[in-house]
Image 1 (cartoon, one colour):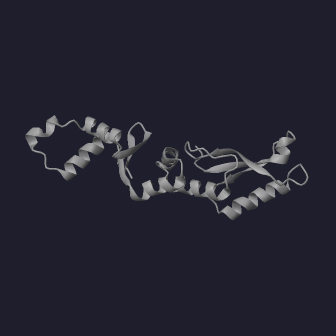
Image 2: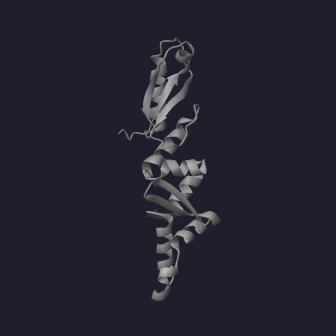
Image 3: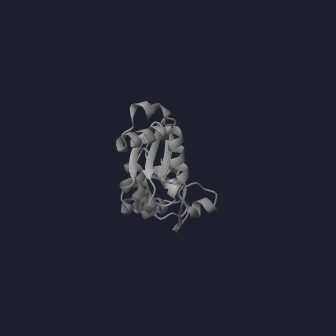
Length: 170
């Protein structure tokens, strides 16, 4: 499986004349290097004087959508965020819709990864409260976790059937 985070940049002059001409580019490299590869692709276009490009495809963004005319700096920042937070980066970006809030959540509000929200509720309760042994069996951690989610106290990002990333709301 290819884990590379990349974009396919196409020459619009060629595309508009029925020809496919473009290049796959690693989106985590420097913006100047991305632009240089696009310039080289345009210079080698089958259409004379090609100047315009568009992102026609992308891979490795984990469900986060990239616009056809997204700027290379934004693409680079998004790709680097997903690379840094590979367990939940794309899903967190999709949840917030922008990199600023996703970055704040990842850096300042991430609590951890759990098998379920109820496991988080149990850990939090046991770390913050002394529960008498005779009452421990009466605590419904599943409902506690659901209530935390529904009240907006936490944000959950489920990345696999047994991986739930918990973030405190902000």
